Image (cartoon, rainbow, N blue to C red; front, top):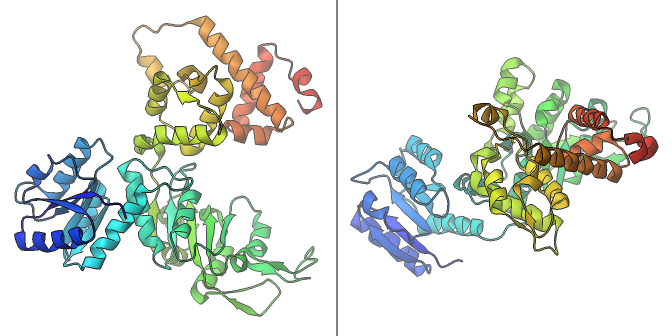
Length: 445
C-alpha cells in the first residue's frame, strides 16, 4: 500500500475520530477539517474524503472547486453520502469525484476503496490515465472486475474500449484465464455464429473438421464482443439464450457445454437508440448493460494527451531519447482528435519518421488545419515555401507507408489513420504534383 496523506472533511467529530483511527492504523497520515472551504486550501492531500454534510458549501460545489484548484488531476475526491442520497452520489461522480461511500460503512469497505485508488496510481500496462475522468472510469472498471456481471463499454471509435475490457479482465479473479476478443463487425454474418459457438464436422458445407468456438475458448475467463451492435437480430437471439442458460452448443451438436465466463460487450453506437429503432433486442440490451462503462473521447480528457503521446514515442522508439517540443505539445493539446487515441498513435508514429533530430516539432505532427479557425483569422500569413515543403514531406511519408505494405491501399489507409477514399484523394493530388506512382511502387500502383 502507498502510505499517503489523506484529508478528511467531516463536521461530525465523533465520526471523524473513528475514521481517523482506522486510517492511521492502516498507515495513512490524516488531517481533519470541519468545513469545506477550509479543506480546499490543504493542497498536501493526495486523497480527500469529503462528507455530504458540509456546513458551508454543497458537496458537488466542493468537488468542482477541488477540480479547478488541482487542474483536473492529482487530487482524488471520495464523496461520503447517506444511504438515501443515491442521486447526490451520482451528481458527485459527474462533478469529478473518483468514487463514493454510503454511510454507515465498515472499516474494510473504506480500506478496500482506498486500495483501489492506490492501484490506479501504480503503472498499468498499456493504460495511461492522468485526467480525473479516466481515473474515475478505471475506478468503476475495478469495481466491475470484482463481480461476475456483464459489462457494456461504450465510446467513440478509437477511444480504447478493448484496452478497458482487458483491464477489467486483468483486475478480476479470472486474470489467469483466457481473454478472447471477437470483432463482430469484422467477421461475415454467415460465419459469425460458427466462430462464436463452434461447429461439428459436417455441420454445413465446408465444415471439414470440428471447430471450437470462441465462447468455449474463453471458458473460465472473459470474452469481449466488440462492435456488438453489428450483430444480426437472429444471432442476437441465440446469444441471449447462451447468456441466459450459461451454456453453448456447437452447430450440428445437441450436447450443451457449460460456461463459466464473463461477457464484456463494446460498441460505438447508442444501443438504447438501436433498441428503439428495432435493430437491437431489448432483452439482450438489458442482459449486457448490467455494469455500463463509458470511455470519454480524447478531447474530453485533455490531460491524457501528452502522457499518451510519450507512451507511443516509447513504444515505437524504445532506444530513442526523442522528446516533444513546446510547440508540438501545444498543438497536440489543442487539436480536437476526432479519431481519438487511434489517431494520436498514428500521428506520433508518423512524426517519428518525419522528425529531424531529437525533438518532434509541431510541423512534424502534420496535424490537419482546423478550417473554422483559419476562416476567423483576421490577417492570415501564408508561407508558400513552408506549405509546399510540408506537403511534399506528407507525400513522401505516404509513399513510404505504401511501400511498406506493398501498395495495399486498405492497409496503408489504416496505418495512416484515414479512409480509403481519403487515401485515393491524396494519391490523386500526388499525381497532379507530377509524382509517378507507377515508377515509385511498380505494378502495385
